[in-house]
Length: 253
Image (cartoon, rainbow, N blue to C red; front, side, top):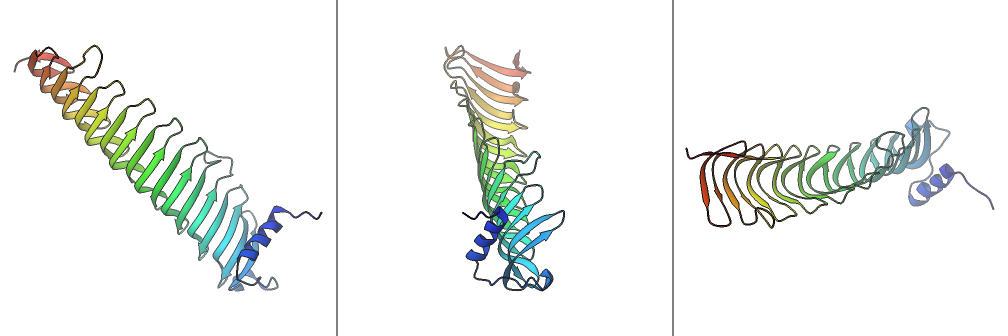
């Protein structure tokens, strides 16, 4: 049985799926138009697919010499439209894969980025970054569903941890920032303001089952600690109201 190299099989596939005739190899590629051909660029990689006015345009596949591979649509020599990009190069991206929309060589539009460690992002992209609505599932089982900006969690979103903790609220630059609710797996709950991933500002902390079950604090926080004016109510009805500093009650002020 006759065997073919992967490149030859790729040529058969692309040409077979294309309505374009084969390019005239007696002419330089700069003159190829409305045809399908193969071009090997020394030190860069190999392209097999459609051409228009001497540039890669239409459906095709490009494989770089470092092992990265793109299969999909191109426009004016750039990845543009629907496509799949697989990282094969021996660097931090090896094993990653993107399937979705491209614009001018960048991820742009709806897409799915699968990481080699098992993490996955499904959602909107802009200029190569997570931007807009998306869902990021982490390798440990944690999940974020919400808004992104410039590759970071930014805006409204829900972050659910693998251990059962959950935050629902505002984010800024990948951190909890603004109004939000953090519910702990043990039943504790904080509702209020956050800044830089910590309780900062005014909020209410209610304790779940455990040593402080039924206790509640309503007041000011700084860097996760009760700080400023606040009211602490014990489950037996006793109330402590006044000034707190770095988590400790300082008295009525």
